Length: 184
Length: 249
Image (cartoon, rainbow over all chains, first blue to last red; front, side, top):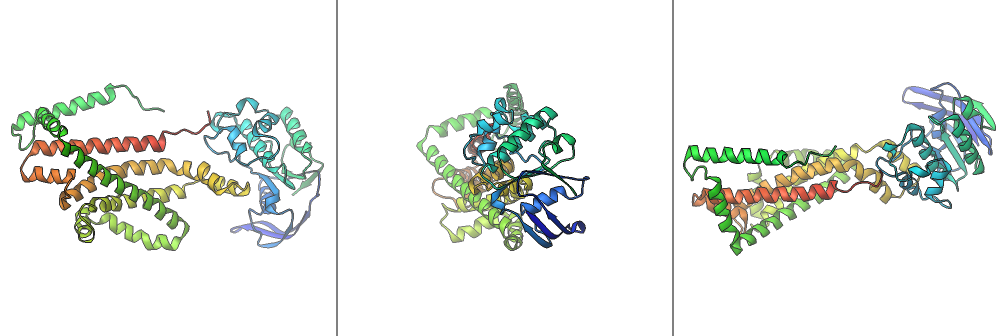
């Protein structure tokens, strides 16, 4: 994956100026850096949710990318099981994904009934269920609100999928799962 | 939070207002001006046993329900189109404002020149309902969470799932409130159209006759029928639109 001569602004706010960056094609890569340095924007550009004003992005096409948004973006009043069924997972069923992230007992619970950490895990499970046959996983702060012990289990789950991962993080526990760390 | 369903919550106000009505009737002492509740009930019972009563009521119900449904469908379709094409919104918005501001009586007389008098209440109800539904549907569409729509695009949700799970649940509360308002408006304007157009079999025509023959108890009785039908239709609509729960705990 390569980003070449990338320039991007939100209105008057310049985020990237002629950024060129090579990213590993396999394994787990972490993007880190201070708040506001453009980590989320970089993921959104790679997912083609934003269009750069200049430059090019050499990455899998958007239909081959699964992006975990920085916000949970769970559908209100819809059960955890349905949240996952909605993205039509192939292979493992919704209950298996819920069990994989430690939410087996919450299959019928709506997001409003879950804690912040649980909602994050549900959002991650939905992303992984959608992304299991994709070529790239983009995870924006996947472990926000998740305790250190669980981060290890989730990292093992993500690694077991064998799909290249690019994720953003600040904390040492999350960064610990990366093969490569890139600081912006 | 569920509303308090204790019987006294509706029974006490009902008894209070019935007492006020009865007291006023006693004070005025003229049935031509304010008939007493027992007289109105007696008139109502006399009406209910006739076959004509049921025919008039059924046909009025049919006309107004048709007009209401037509107004709802057209209002939603208009909102979908104006939400998609801003030029269409710019074109239609002033026209709809003019429709809202125009006296219903003007429309009734105008529409009477265009269509058969039995169909005027249908057209008038639809015309009154359309702007209310259009505005609330358009506002509902604008209020759909952009983040969820972006999620739907990024995860390649089908158009059907996006509408079923994100768009419709988000706009339903506003639409339901507008439909309830529209039901009351449809009945008011529909019966007014019947009063002015006098279809052969209609509640509005009977209201007109009660005015013509100064039969105030009959006027009260028919009005009670209209109010009861309007509230019943509103209750059914509320149940249909808001009664269904999502599957999450």
